[in-house]
Length: 86
Image (cartoon, rainbow, N blue to C red):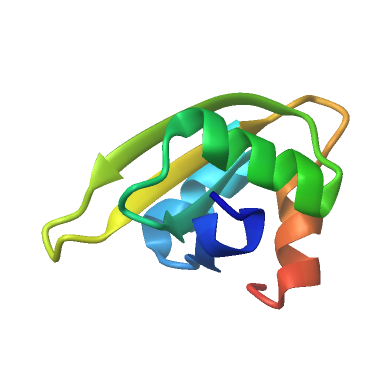
């Protein structure tokens, strides 16, 4: 799957903000058919970040959410500011 089609858009809700600040995680809505490995590859390829772990859930509205834990050398707060989330 094309990296540009895996990541749809970043989230900036209350839970996403808490995860970003406390656990160094970014939250994205991703393509429903994408795997954790595809999500990890897309983040690493498109943004040059080192991903430690990817957790996914299907939200109540049928969208797939990915919580992406970044390595210690990257700041999720700083990355989110580049996305225009903050």
